[in-house]
Length: 328
Image 1 (tube, rainbow, N blue to C red):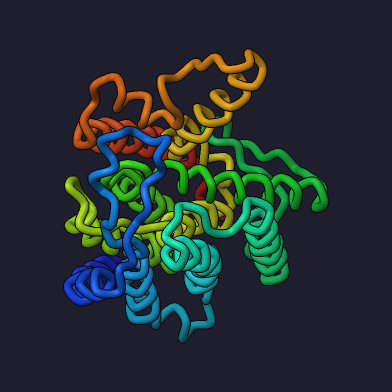
Image 2: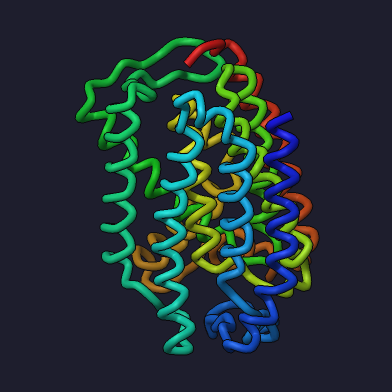
């Protein structure tokens, strides 16, 4: 029942906030600035309200408190910690969005500033989970059913790298109407199933809230988008995706459930590296991957549908890979 309550509360709060927040963002002229180097047809999106991620962040927060209240009364706060971890990344994104809106330009915080803030948040989260006894340095290997035991210093480096990389990969995926939203919904549902299977109902509540908030946000974010989540939303989602993986002690599942995130960020890295090595040549028509496919004739709706379906299939496969893990 708590899973259903979490989904419904997050959906309802997010949907109702959208009715209020989107007109407010329009009045405040908090519109997205579109990069001139992007696809030319994206220029029509110029001025679409951004920072819409505030809607589902509030919805998820309300659901975590309401649906997860029973667990908190029992002294279990892991779902709240994951939410707060994601919220820190959302706050970093909000500052970035605010700077962009304030200066009417598509640049906010510098890359080093974002990296250091994200790195600090990641390390703090891992240290906290270890202190609470939720996390151990044993990497569970999906399908194999065995663990790779690492010394804590090595695990800390691994965890920080994975978290920062995941957050930025989700951020890059948010480049087409509804794409990051649609891809992350099956990821959230995977976490619900994995949490319930492992007996971590509190984390199941967070996953259900995440799915509910995104389902409601998709009403406004589906093509043609009435609002964008902004870095506020995409960095929050990145924090939620990796936060849940580490809280469940299954971080190696991220490349499977986040195959689209990985493909997006790798296409960007490959493009930049190849461009520099060949002094101007490109592998992709445009990076990241969704822009390459757009310029090949794919519509935004097709991108949304195909990428979401691929993610859903990978989540089913990933669940099969972690079923052997009965306890955390």
